[in-house]
Image 1 (cartoon, rainbow, N blue to C red):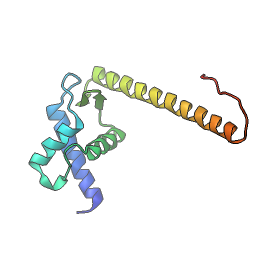
Image 2 (image 1 turned 180 degrees about the horizontal axis):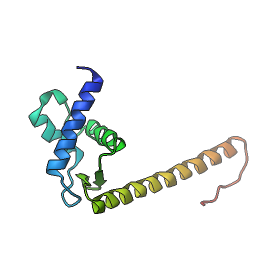
Image 3 (image 1 turned 120 degrees about the horizontal axis):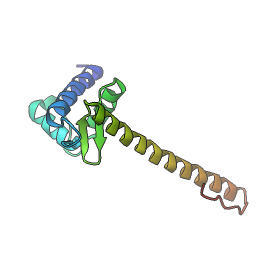
Image 4 (image 1 turned 120 degrees about the vertical axis):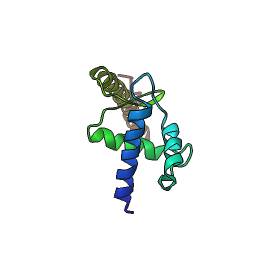
Length: 127
């Protein structure tokens, strides 16, 4: 089986599992639990215990294809209602904002390191 076919198969399994076992934001399911569940039904998926990268990558691919998969600190869920989609969207925007803050801090640190390498003593202020 090709890698692409394996991913497509995994995506279908993940989608089905989330729709059935994590039907809304009140019943999220951690990626590790999704992986454990899938392994009990199809050993060829080979999702290793706590190594949930395959499940997270699958959720990402499904979202990119327009499937309403929400997430929160307690796992993934099917965001199949307007309210669920709004909640999932707010969560994603919050994650984007946190990543942007981290990127700005990284840029400030990089700028400060360049100044120090040039022998300048200027501090970069937080914006």
